[in-house]
Image (cartoon, rainbow, N blue to C red):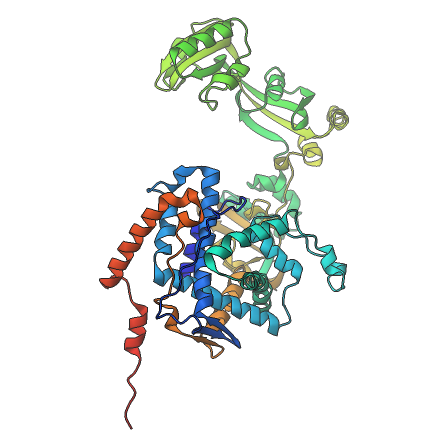
Amino acid sequence: MSRISVKFYAILLVLLVILPVSAQDDGYQIPEAPEDVNLDEVVAQVGDEVITLEEFRARVRYERVSSYINLNNAVEQQGAELLAPENPSVNGLLQILVDDVELGEIVYETMLSEQLFYQEAQARDLLPTQCAIDTAWAQQLGLPPVQPPIAEATESADAEADCPLPEGFEQARADYLATVQPYSGITEEALDLIMTARASAEPVRNAIGEEFEIEEVPVVRTRHIRVEEADTAQEVVERLEAGEDFQELLEEFTVDTAAVGSGGDLGEFERGAMVPEFEDAVFSAEVGVITGPVETQFGYHVIEVTDQTLGEAAQIRQILLNDEEDANAAVRLMEDGRDVEELAQLYSVDPTIANGMPMTVRPGESQAGITYDEAVFNAEAGDVIGPLETEQGFFAILVEEVGEQVVSVNARHILVETEETAQEVIERLEAGDEFADLAREYSTEPAAQPIGADTLTLASNGQAEGFYADGQILPEFDVIFEAEVGDIVGPIPVEGVGFFIVEVQEFSTQEPQDAATQRQAYVDEWQSEQRLSDRVEISPAWRGAVPFDPLPGEVFETLAPVDERLIEFRETYLEEFEAGLIPNVLQELQATTPEPQSE
């Protein structure tokens, strides 16, 4: 597909919204061709198949009507404001539709490509089944994909019976034909060929791509320990070389916490960071005491608070209103005991900072212009404060607790799916098992589980594992490809990251990461070569014969507002063309044709 066709179809995709097709039924007549246009003239030949000027002109009109269908569907979905003069997507589409050179080139090249892939499918015995053709039709009609036949039936005579059409397929196809044919003159056979060519393209491209020999590249599988200090790295190397266990040293030294898992450690957090049930348990627990099972929406938690920070603080709930009258009403409701979270859901204009949930504030803190020292710390538990005016609106605040309290905790947890499993974990903890070990064994929280020391796993945050190519991880890892299996490589310093001690586990080869891109380029090159070969004969006769009809409003009344704009764009285009601001390719071709030499 050429650059300009990509641009054209990209604009259509921006506008595309699948809705039923319903064009006007006003007895539209396709204008007769100008007297100097010979509709039988061949404008291209691909193999034994010819494309006439009449077929080309019908295809241009069809592409116009297709773009109007997409635009009309978008208007019905998004409203008439989509057609506003300042909409760049609509204007971009109209600018292409008035350009004989660009639109004609899009249609011409598309028709050539379709014939190339269709004929190649014939030659390679890759013609699509009726199921695949119907799938292309379904996509065009905006219907669900046709269900392909089961593998066992693909070779049988009953294969088509195993490929049911989506509901409404026949009616949608009939409606589509009834819309595009009267305004374009395109035949049903031509449309079927378009769908067949589309269904042929992918298997042909895949077959050609498989012919391209990809040169495999060397890859390596390693595991590593990362530390922060050079002296520590050297110690790890020496202990590995002395025969100590890699896994034990990993757990002792690595700064890649994901390698060994968090052991359920949540770090330090304040109120508002977790779900309410979890926080109620954590902030009322004693340090070192196992709490649970605590049920939340995620499952059952076994919790241990490992540290607490005490200090002067206030626990509040707040909502934010647009105006003072609403804020006064909210204050009265809060004083009457209404649930603050419920009020926030109904009325708060910014749930990110005022969602009615408990939050802890400390002296000196401020938010959205509120200084909590003044507003909160002179209040008592149960007081409702407000309205407090800020640049963002009016706050209403319920003070739940003031004074010295737990303002943050360090905690760890084990998350399991059932209460019975949670009880089993508690019993093992009480029997002396290590919390972190049980977290790695039981917890369904991903961060608690170790992902191992595999280098690619750590580099991809658990998304891949195993072999990696030179340059895929870090440039400093190039040295690994000079080592042998079993070698300890390092310490490898990486600025800002630390020191890596790498164990080489296995070498192999595999396709490079850009193998798909290389195959795509090979197929594109094949298409270009075919396009320039003797297999394809082209003619500039289509230039100057690109029809400008129909107008959008002639197909859909909803699009009539853009008719005048399209005509204005057309007049500007013709003026620029006559002034030489737009290249006249036909004249250039004629000018470069050598004069016949006399004998």
